[in-house]
Structures are given as C-alpha cells and as structure tokens.
Image (cartoon, rainbow, N blue to C red; front, side):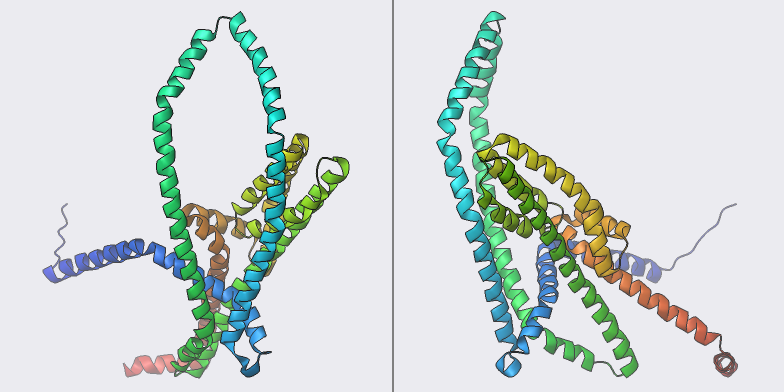
Length: 378
C-alpha cells in the first residue's frame, strides 16, 4: 500500500529556510568562538570579582565602584608580583646549582659510556650504531626546520594569548563598573512586579553558584598548596640536600597553577619535581610519587566534596560536567563547566517548581470553574 504525502511549496520553502538559518547561525557561532570565549571568560571573572568589589566600594568615599575595581586590580597585581618574588629566585638558584653540577654529571656519563663502548666492541654492534648515527644526521635538518616552525608558531600563539588576556582584563573591568547599571536597566523593563521578583531571585541564585564555585576552587588550591609545602619541608628535614626555603615557592606555585582545573596542578607538580631533582634525585622521585597519590585523592574526594557543597551538586555531577567541558571546549570548558552545571540545576529546579505550582493551582475548585467558564465562552 502506497501512501502519498502532499506538501505545498510554501511549507517546503519555509522548512529549508529554517534549516539554512540554523546552519548559518551555527557557522556564525563557530566563526566567533574565540570572541565568545573571551566574552564568556570576562563575564565569569566579573561575577567572581563582584563580591570583593561591592564590599570595597562601600568603604570608599562616594561608594565609587570605579575606585573599588581599580583597587581590586592593584591588589591582584600586587599578589602576582609577590608570587613571582617568591617563585623566581629559588628557581634561578636551583638552576644555577644544576649548571654547576653539570661537569660532574658529564664525567659520570662519560665513564658509563666507556663501559657501553666496550660492550659495543665486544658484541660487534659498531655497524648498527654507525647506521643509527648517520640516520640522525640526515634527519637533523628536518628536525631543525620543524623546531623553527614550532618556535615561530609558539611566538604567534604567545602574542595572541597576551592580546586575548588584555581584552579579558579590559572587558572584566568594564563589566564590573557598568554591571549594576545594566542590572537596574534590565529590572526596569519588567511590568509584572511578581515576575520581576521571581527572575531576580533566579539570577541571584545562579550568581551564588558562580561565587560558590570560585570560593571552593580557592579552598581546594589552598589545601593542595599547604600539603605540597609540608611535603617539601619534610623532605628537607630528612634529606639535607633539599633546602627548606623551597617550601614557600612550592606553596605559591601549587596554589596559583591549581586554580586551573585538570592541567594546572600537573604543571605545578612537574615544576616542583624538577626543582627537587636539581638538588637530589631521590627527593624528586619521592615528591613525584606523593604528587600522583595526592592528585588521586584530590580529584576523587577533596575537590568533588568541596565543590558539591559549594554549588549543591553531587560528586558525580561535578566529575561528569568537568569531563564534558574538557572534551568539548578544552581548558576553558573545564574551567566553566562546574558553574554552568550549577546554573543549569538552578534553572531546572525553578521550572520544575513552577510547573508543580501550576498543576496544584489547576486542581483547585475555583480554578477549575474559571477554566470551565472560559471554555463555555469560547
């Protein structure tokens, strides 16, 4: 049995126009993804910094929000300078110490290589070694070209990152200064006072999710920095070659880099491990083992537990949102995944509660009568 479906030309054209519109919108969003990421990052930072800026503006003459924002920026820059002052000198010191120990290491490697040379001669492996060395020489030019291209690309990426960072800072500053005025304009649009109050409450709850996430991330980073500094201090007690003054730079490095989800802690742990290896190889290995174990504890227990309390999400939801954010949007997605998941939870709860209230209202006798009368009128 054949079924024939007739579609008029207007419906056919309208359908394809809608499909083309969706495709163009998706293409526009994809083309503007960098700008959207910059705007989203600025908005997220503005929401996170709004609490200290609002508190500081109350103490300034005239309650100047511009002055409070400027002072907050100065405080952040001062903290960054302090972190650099704690971190850079020990790194330079340990690097210089490593450079001084290079001759001894070369002598050790040379003595070991002599034993390897005897092994090669004994088992007639010189031909294979020469072939491998010749292959390395032939490929050296292509490796050098690849390194040069990578360096040029890295320089371009660095300047692109600097430009994006400046845009984020400027946009964040303007959002902090003009944010309250835009909020008042948004609220003045409403004609229904009850709806305005409901939506204002909804936005305030979502704002609380973002600020709670920032507080939770700072707490997790502080715990990790304290534990890392304590580990390095204990190593300096039991291994004399490890200087005790590495504890403070370790705390600073771990705290700052741990603010970046997923990858930041790994970068910080690698830097500290290298600093310890410059002084004592067993100390570096011990710290690397400690870091791996602590990361498992933090990622599976500490961070999900703290973030779940701050944004009222289960540990499973926190881990799932971070995983989706990382694999879909990269590092930026990992940073904003948790607060977005919390905001989505707030929206779902709001609309579920609204639907429940509407069902309860529809069950009341008076509501049923009004609905019946309206149906009779129609």
